Length: 194
Length: 250
Image 1 (cartoon, helix red, strand yellow):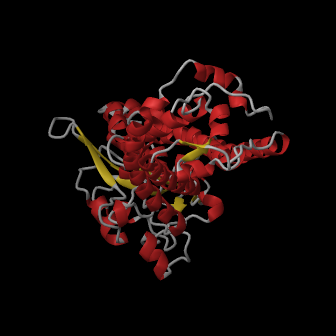
Image 2 (image 1 turned 135 degrees about the vertical axis):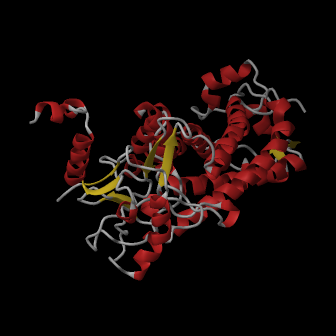
Image 3 (image 1 turned 180 degrees about the horizontal axis):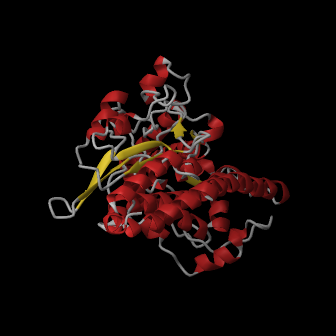
């Protein structure tokens, strides 16, 4: 089985935030939560670059290590999911995560946090696949439908790649090669043929 | 470029993020498990081998705790008990099943935290003078307050002994630190590194306070027979004061 990965090509990302909106609308995410966000550096200056980020679905994920109820788990294909009904909203996963992926809906009694919410790689959750409960709690299960996550599917510049890690790497490697760098630097293929 | 992205994306993860992850993964749960098993066992052993100190309760009495201090003490005691219970519920959330029960526990934890913080302020000022450390407190610690022998020998202690003073300072000043770090953890706002540091402080300090809490429970309910009444009526038997608080002047 493949290993699911995200990869954002910063040479292509144009900071349109389409991925953020697609994820939020398509998965009916609680108010105040964005599972995906776009980081822009050197905004408004030459060399401005953007990067779309969400849960990285880490190998040896720190959130899984710290969860006091062990409600976060990793599937065989590397996707990290969690059980919202077991979650106690303690926030430890948020503190352990280097990427700020786990988020918490506010607005309960005493301003208490609800259950954690994060990117599911559009793979739903522990509930029965395609059940109404799964859609309500976790959003769509596009992986079970054989599709890429919403964010990557709608990305206009195809900057955000998602899927089997080796395929994603191949696509990116080919792009970098065509764009030209290293041995494929500008002009070389014209000058030397082969 | 990658450096800039990394700074914006992950920040200084290795500083506290990794530390917090490792501590929470291996240490915090075990510390509380050890405290909750070993300390009661030690006290059970003490109760069976040395046994409680008994003083005549029908003899002359000394007025020890004023009405205000007793009321403040019981408000603090009730809220602190809830804090310990609900805090342990979060630590041992997995065997309890997690979910809504523990989330409710966290709400109670927050509410009792506010009540405790409010009650700890008058408690601090009422007992501050009597809780100032003195030289003979060191002596008290050396003989472990006389609790390791069955004999009734006067131990060096004023209105409060060294152990009580330690509990007082940890509960008030430590309680303030816990309240502040708890406030940060509740809000989960601001720099992530600060939140991580607060979580580490909150867990370690809470472990110390739970240990002290258990000790306080054992001392007041079991180790000195009938000493619980003094916090209800305000009166202590004269004999008990002469032995356990030998430097106390009315």
